[in-house]
Length: 280
Image 1 (spheres, one colour):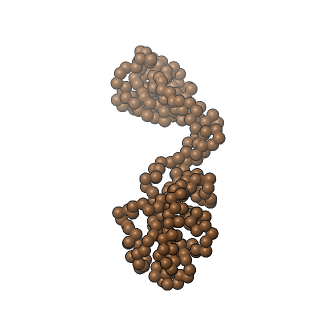
Image 2 (cartoon, helix red, strand yellow):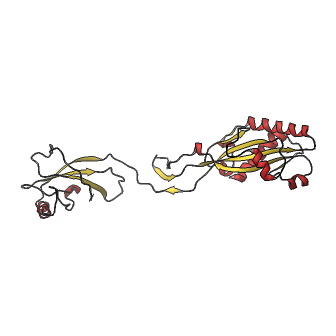
Image 3 (tube, helix red, strand yellow):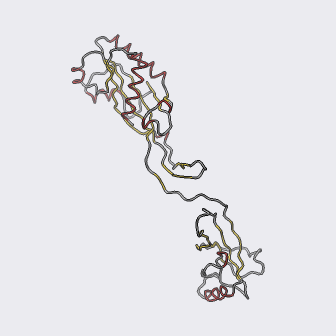
């Protein structure tokens, strides 16, 4: 991504600032040794700082959907980084350097945003624009004077250009099958003699008036002990179906209750206990 930002700036400067002149465009550090070796006029775009743009960070996974609207992947959104360039002009006369800086300043101001359709390579993959800011106040933790001191050179007129560019994060997360129906909760009546016998056998092991879990009954219902006569009642939750192609869909028993006269009117104060069963 960094080298592609360099290429983007090179095209922009050569087209809108240098206008085909013989001024050389370089990306070197403007140290004393470099200045001593320089021959002829030059524009230097020195990359001196790289950091993430936290204000544009999206701390959440994004769903990638297919043509039918179903989720096909889940990935992290692109991150954006701020690349700071120290832009300087080098000629024999200060007047010529000022003219070059003026042309560079105008070029950057005219292009505050590069649209995705005008980007190339990995910069175009996120389908996000690239932003170019010039001459903004420096952050409190750094200044251009500190940059010049680190380079060992003398302070001279320069432009502080910050390019905010996206970068793809190749990291994915698992995702489940699509939901095809809403979940439901209701009461199930058990009248199967064999199941009632198993419920009675489990009743001695229950606690707090509840019961142990028996095997799934007909239609995938799980039942509770405590039945009186030939009936036992259990509250059963049926989750949303996830796929018509699956052989079995998981269910959850949410509540076991003692036998009641009318299952449609359970007594108040029932407590929920979750157990997983299978239904087909």
